[in-house]
Length: 561
Image (cartoon, rainbow, N blue to C red; front, side):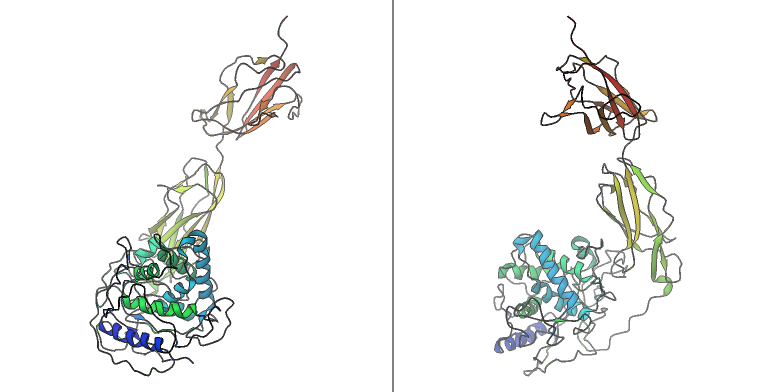
């Protein structure tokens, strides 16, 4: 097994000293290096590299303690073997199958939508390794969601940054302070901006590796970065966590994975210990941390292979103590399910507001109502219907009775069925699905706006146009679809093949027009009508959506001698 370093690095002199030894050892063994385009050779581990982040960059992660486990000194495979990876080598250097698939899927997605960024999946793998040990060694379900949330320490200013709650505890379960969430460790406010649906399930879940990997990729590609350029890559990593030490560690893993790696089964990867009050991990994306007092470690010149994680991780501020056990939530405070709370039939006419509003109820583990649960309502499907205010997704919290009602749905002009899903934000609970329908505008009456006789000579055009008005319940019926057809006589009329006709855009003869609609005042004026050489009395039928019909006579006669 290849020798490797496993240390918990902190800001300040500790991080610099340990990294210097680690990087020197890597270089001496011809392992993956840590050459930084932005590294000026300074000794300050927590100082930003020159020109590292533009002023418009926000920071995705804070510089709290992170688990660094530097790469093995010997790459597991030869360069160029990063596809069709074999299941060989140590669990520490391998990448769990679902996690690796998520990184590669994110790379492909960015190649389609932002090809100029040139995001390599190995960069996501390097960040994922540092942030959460590849989703806690690939402890994910078939959809890529971690079996339990990966949470960083409480950002209460005690050894870490002070960030008051921004999500009402929806993602991190803490309604007082924020905590980092998921395998790529986003704080909730950052996830609210950059969250993605990487696996196409209609959700943006920071605890899903596909969603988190795509979100991290888009964050790294922000602006006009080209990650094939070393300086841009450094700027991207520093925008994720503004620390040279973090950059060195990510760079080391990035170079290592570029030399080749291997796939390991989900759940079999190396698992870093929880750090400093975190659950499964302790990264804090999206913020700048409070500095940690430096320590003076004595790194071993002869690192031992595959060191076991210290069962007593250091707490911020120095000193190695056993972590306090995380208290289990009481059943009455634990979300058990989200269900429909009596929503009626969801249907509306195009352009109208839905009379019914979606209502859901959150229940605790005992079946009682649970307040302050964040619920996200999302419109899905091919529709232009939106919530009041033009939004396709809204997030609200349940009240004291455990219920929350979505805003009014405003139907668009597109008819048909679509879905609305209600989910407990950031929770691995089934969504509550609703089917909604938009029907076409209707009219129950249609009539001509005048009673002029409509006549034309053979081969000429009718001098007067045909105008009609549609109503519904006596009121103007705007936007109603109308079909106009030249029909035959008889009890079962069909389209006539002679007599008056219309012309299409190419000047061809047509005797049926569709896609006609009444205007805002309910009126419709038909295009010009032409007569062929056959004289006689003919009929034009107009039918609205809703079944209203009017039949108009057209007379083709030779002019008087």
